[in-house]
Length: 378
Ligand code: T4K
Image 1 (cartoon, rainbow, N blue to C red):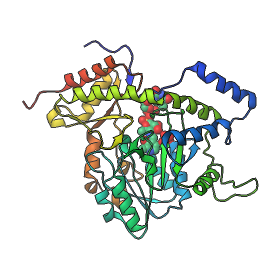
Image 2: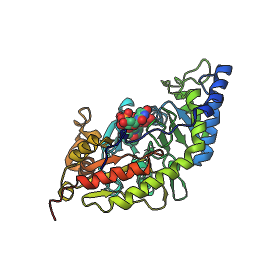
Image 3: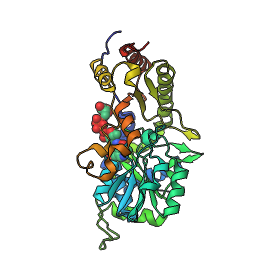
Image 4: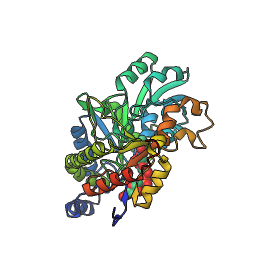
């Protein structure tokens, strides 16, 4: 097999044509409105709410600050049940709010928080659940809602991966009290950096908008210790253009996803997640899981061998959040209670998937994974 001419990374951000962006920049330069709820910011909030089919959206500088503020606006405190199988920002946002994370294991099918293990972790201090729609696949939202109702808990979804994902005919972000999205460069929809909080009512949006602007509720009044997490006009303008390309990007991702599924299916020791039912997915990631016994070499060895070939997958999510030094002291970080998360974390590699990835490159990646397998057990 020939070597690649250029490396392939886990993702490559999609951008609009530069020519199309210039008129937006000209307007910014002319009006000198750079930030603080300018015209592009207002327009993007409106267009995104329509596009996603959600009631209220507040734009943010990034997904992490969106999550920090979502917890703040709902007054979440004490203990919060969450997943160890996520990007560290999920738990960091709890610590920023002086909240204790309580880790609960994931289910093996989609690596999302296991609803059947939530109740055992609820104490008198529990105020909320923060599940993650990992890789964009919806959590068991109905079951989580049932549990939250029973115990009077809030649900804040970290939907950082789930832009444009619909579940049972509506945005997955319509479930729970609040959802957040990330528009980071590596995400399905990017504004270079960025994010949103999606909430249910106008009053909560108003409070969120105060909190992301230092807590100012008018020129001379502060309602709380807010932070500066506003999205600027350049990012918002980019978002408006990105929205036009989104559907065609998803189509390109779907073709890549299909090619991986059809071919990796044939390779022993390699498995991948099923397509979730009743869901319009966004093909944000393509995680594979390596069974060392069947595949013949370990996940880490495959990861290194792929790199030698110029293929830079990522082990999202290894290590688990609960394994980082700042988290591993919590009782709930005990790995004996997080067996499914641990197993997924030790087996996973996210393969490259992005709209500009050529199908010949996908075939090359598949070919390498097939070639590296060692026939030790037949
Ligand atoms: N919750 C969840 C569940 C999340 O996954 C995240 C973020 C958040 C919350 C927080 O949202 P933000 O505050 O980030 O909006 C990346 C991202 O930095 C992070 O946004 C993301 N999750 C996480 C899963 O992945 P890295 O350190 O793996 O990214 P990096 O820089 O190594 O990029 C991966 C590859 O992408 C590079 O090898 C090349 C390519 N790339 C990357 C960037 C940044 C480009 O081609 N261009 C670029 O500009 O964390």
